Image (tube, rainbow, N blue to C red; front, side, top):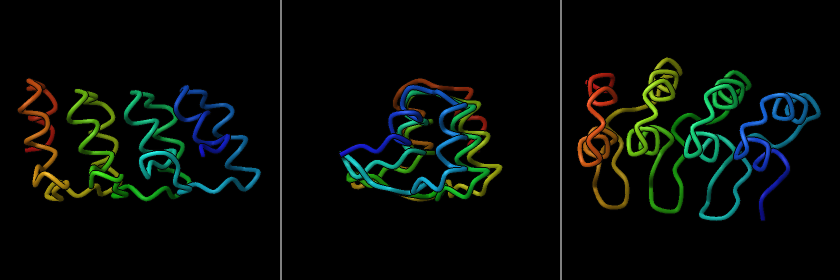
Length: 120
């Protein structure tokens, strides 16, 4: 099941994310779909929560059950600012998901030109 940190990340509540991290919450715990708090924050487009999780050491290249990383998800959803932040924390642009797609392919398939520019 999902942890309180996952729910805080999913809802974008950066204050609760910070409090839970300071209290020792497991930053890379896995829930439904093998998702971590960073994956949930990225999928839902919550940049402040993404930044806090990265700053506290979340695995930037973590993969969900389909092999998608946060960079895959930000590219698919068109969350360009999140993609930029992930790259600042050394997200790998060449990782492929279970369907052999890179983040760049995800951005292109979904028409996110700005995100594509960030990835190139």
